[in-house]
Length: 150
Image 1 (cartoon, one colour):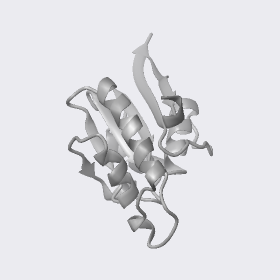
Image 2 (cartoon, one colour; image 1 turned 135 degrees about the vertical axis):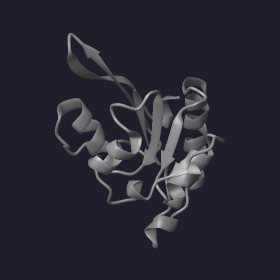
Image 3 (spheres, rainbow, N blue to C red; image 1 turned 180 degrees about the vertical axis):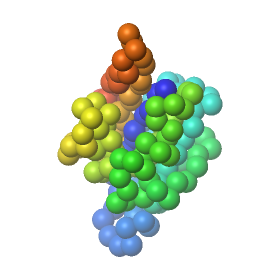
Image 4 (spheres, rainbow, N blue to C red; image 1 turned 120 degrees about the vertical axis):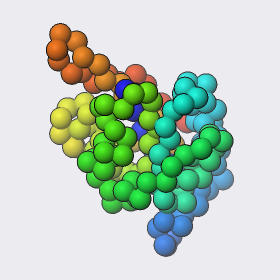
């Protein structure tokens, strides 16, 4: 399974939190990363997003269908991300568009077995895959990429 964690792009400050839109910079970040992702993701990739406007706008840049998952809203946790994505048993690729600190904690949990604080920049992607070698489950980091790197 491939699990891609995509932090929403730059958003305006304010309340209510779920209605914060992307800034002009954020729209550019989302478009840049979406262009790269569309070249990498299989057509049948499952795309999941938080209900927050900023995550939906980030996912909209892909111009693909996605599912809104309430458990991915701000304040969610690693267990919700893993359950929603079907990690590690889902067959194929799953892209989760979400928030900090949840995505960083999910990333660290999968790499080190513990949800440690880890920052993922706005608009950045972390791409993980799992495999079994000699009856041992392994998690591999395939890509860590920020919009500025594109």
